[in-house]
Image 1 (tube, rainbow, N blue to C red):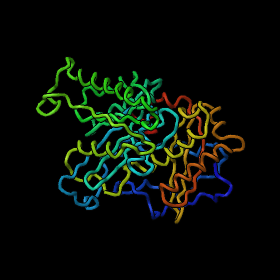
Image 2 (image 1 turned 135 degrees about the vertical axis):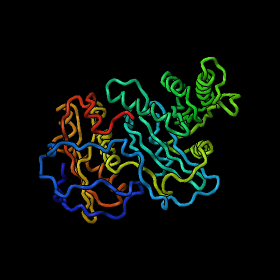
Image 3 (image 1 turned 90 degrees about the vertical axis):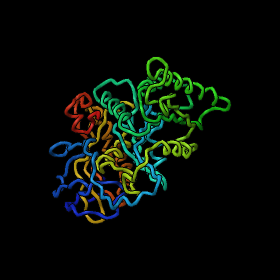
Image 4 (image 1 turned 90 degrees about the horizontal axis):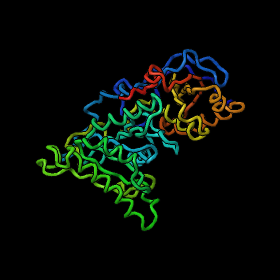
Length: 392
């Protein structure tokens, strides 16, 4: 919906200065359309339908100038670190805290993260590329299956794994299931006991003990008989331990110790990205996620899991960036809720998203939202692929 105070969508696509610190290919952001969209009623679908977010595979193999990477000092370490865990244990909150900027959306709604989001932290001695994965859960539709597949796939593609758990609760079946997924993992694993600030006095020992038992159970069955495997520890003499780190992703308590331990397990290597980069995600994906975050924040329980967002057009015009986006839902009733009486809900969602986009783009933003009903899009393989949910 277009707020009354916003003028018509600009038609120029001249590049804009002051972009965020995102590692991008040499070609820069996707080309914007040269023509503005026609005026449409609130909740209408823009002509041609949603264009879809950039597929996740397109974020791989980016071309980065070697000169922009600078010279890495002797002993420098670099690599990829997967954040793995159940839904709603705080993976995205931890990623944002470690990177120091918001690169992943957060909300109290389970399964908020749907894509593998990468955040980059560069210190004087190491560069850590964190991969925030969807929460591992029992899927109930094709979208859920692809999210879990994406999270599991990340385990075999990184240099270190951080298993994030809710340290304010005893280890549960979900944690045990993920531990079993990591049983054959041949890279270092660190267990971060998040929400340590919520642990009541006198309960920390019992809670940590439940995770020590879980880790001991997994490591003790690494080869199926309780003995070490050739890849476990120096010379294969003993299984590699999984250190436990009590932390708070919200306050940052314990995160410096976790960072130091994870960085020490990365391989020696040069910078993988420029030192000032905080993410290598396409701008389209980041913008779409900011809109979805506002939907999660403002709508009732039936809406969040049925929503997807696609960025249809990005147009730069001098000091302002204009963005057209489509919010997909599965039922007409959900569309009505999203639009609200007189367009009030969609206006509130758009206002919240714009505030976040201004920080990302570092400049004024004009945002126009549309809502489209696509029945059962979460079960449609073609639609999921179009939206970038490929499971790889």
